[in-house]
Image (cartoon, rainbow, N blue to C red):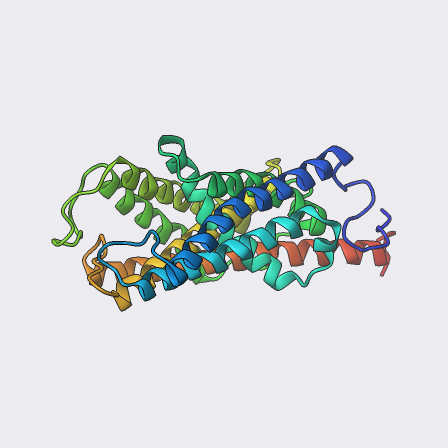
Length: 313
């Protein structure tokens, strides 16, 4: 099997031209729709600084500007990510920042997709979510084919998973059960200062529970090669988004639960929130570590087979 000159994908396993076109279109759509959101936020900040504009009635201008400035940075990062996924130069960017922002972005937006079915969030976030859902898998497949090509059972077994990895499915299943319990009306462990939440909030936490379960399934399949003829891309991509969802949302809520700015009250009892989201962050990082290890082992096996095609010593 020959390797392309850019070293990104073995000849014969690269996706077809149609998938490349889909990646480009989806990435540009994500960047374009999120640009609309960015323009609105820039206008709000400008008006708040230089005139009488929209801002929360119970907050100061400084607080309003700071809040929206953070969203401006986030939107700008999302636009850059969409462009990187769409363009060929994105394939040449350093892997760590691309993986990190893709991981966190897919984690945040993946949990929001079912929430957006019921209530219109915004054109910007909806377009970014859909564009990312299409462009990211194709990008990852093109750039790191050994992590997505083939079947689960075809790869090397590798070393047995460590004890911490064996605990991940247990931890994520417990988190999923807890979040589903709250989503369906349970109150055990909730903050007494938090009175009620609507259907949208229930959908959001229920979505998090779904991704936690999918993350557990991905670990079980990949750590034991129990998937047999299951396409490798399925547990790899599911695990990528699930781990991103666990880490992104848990880290976000962890910071708010610990710092508790202003009169913010977490949904959960503060002590429960710290433990819950600490476990979520650790599980997300552990799943991502497994995915990286699977790719490294398969890439090393492929390199060894190319160096010794006849299997001679």
